[in-house]
Length: 93
Image 1 (cartoon, rainbow, N blue to C red):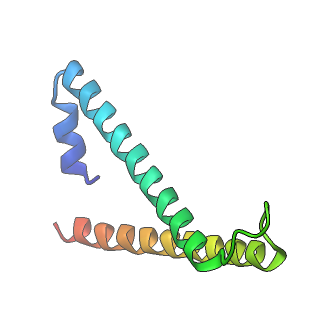
Image 2: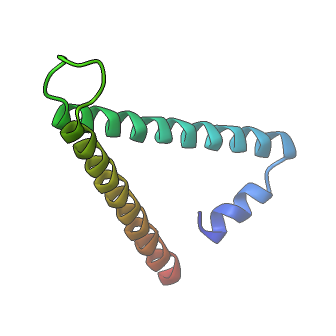
């Protein structure tokens, strides 16, 4: 959030600020769940081949671990890049 948005939020009545805060929290939870579900679906599809065994085989387990690491690193990098772009846009204003 840039400074003008924060100033706008500060000018709202307390009840409205609380509602906005609750909405933002819900959006963050929704986005976290969406990312988690995407990670699970992607890694499961890529790594699990058969259902012959009750638990993951060694190769499936290592594939899931690598997949999750790559997914999380990618998500962090995209988030950092997005923050850099937002910071650059905020300084241009």
